[in-house]
Image 1 (cartoon, rainbow, N blue to C red):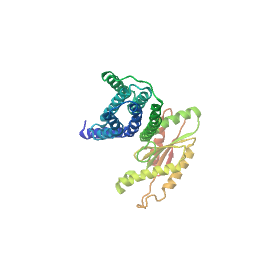
Image 2: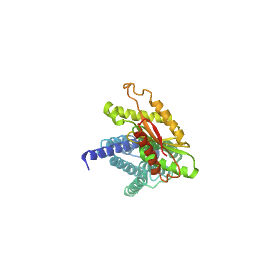
Image 3: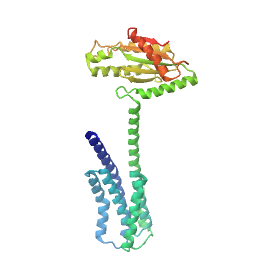
Image 4: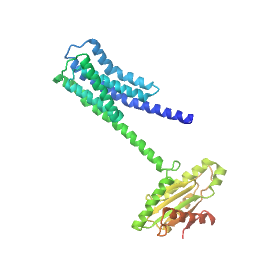
Length: 354
């Protein structure tokens, strides 16, 4: 693997891990903070040493910041954060054992941690952390010979309510925002896969798939459909005389004028380089020709204020769909041949395929 590519992949993995750690930071603050009240509701009704109260405070209110700092400064933040989640599970098991498996606080802590682990890493992380939590709880219960006291008092129930009510709502909001971002990223990727980066029109691959659909539609419903191929005249001369930036600007301007001239139902794509294509459903070849003539009139205006002598001229080939075109390639070839004739006959003109 090239060194530059390897470095890029490592950086992407690092940034992804940092985002993951940041995503779990706030849920950990809220979850462990409210969870401390669940544990404290049991400990306060029994004789509890001061060092255990200090440990509860550290775990509930200081550990979330230590965990985030640890992941943030790790060379592998994602792996570090997974270890943090496992540590959360072990601590959860310890508190469940110290509470003597008190029913409601124990079930609340187990359920909320499970919810957090599923949202963070799916079923795999949930089972790993649940196993660690149960193992820690049972081991401490038997090793320290702690009493088994599953009864929940009304006072303990009330102090569990903040976690039961607040944490699911907070985690749901975090999950919702994450899903929104993923949906936006997915939409952006879909746009990249079907759109041309320079003009925003359909790229050739996607446009050709739409061409196949229109051919099938013609065969089924027998409605008139016309294909147009458009090419900028003397485009190489524009690049040579004015530079590639002006050439790109010419392509962008033509795309904009195409969108202004054609109907919303027309399917416009950048076919490659300075060549464009449009499918006009429910249109005859004469209607398509009039559309190109309107486009030529718009292009006759001065579109380059810094280069008033520069005008965009186009040639176009038109092919109306009929029964002789059995494949999209044959339909394209008919329009391409008409475009060739337009170029051969002097350019800046429109030819219709026979």
